[in-house]
Amino acid sequence: MIANDLHRFVYYCKKIQPQTQEDIQQFFEGVIVFPYDKELLLQAYLFLNIKNLFPDCYELLLFEKSPIADYTDLGKCDFVYLTSRGNLFLIETKFIDTEATGATERKRRNKHRNKVFEQVITLKNRFSEYWDIKLDQLECGVFTTDSEVDWRGNDMNVITRSIAIDQLEKWRKTYRRIN
Image (cartoon, rainbow, N blue to C red; front, side, top):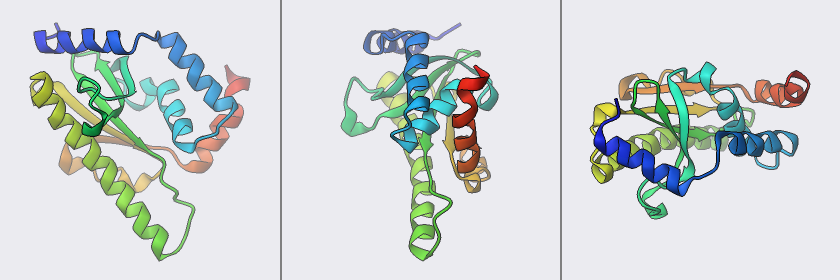
């Protein structure tokens, strides 16, 4: 059973993101064919493999929209899912170039690792405050191309998943033949 404030939020999502799951799937399948943006390709992989990565995710409510009445200055969430338990699951994605070398690249990767966690935790708190949703009804996840983030979520109550860049590219090339 969805709590009243969560129900209000779900209604809001359906109003501002009226696309069906099928429409969103078609969009992401187009991204696979013409991968003009690495972050979008990562998001396509997440969307099309959500049950394997985050099994509790049941229905996509928002994609790349602000959960706070269109105040994008307060942040937008990459994905907001309704879970099978009736909670919200916020997922932030980040394409982190793990193939680049050198001190500057290591520094950049670390900055990206920290930022993706900061984003999802901040959004969780803003969700809770703005929509009056209890923190225990909000779950968080991070999905990147960097396996180094896998252990970082433990202390922050954030579920982390990753895919290597070469595996992502291999998946992209074989996706059409499989489906």
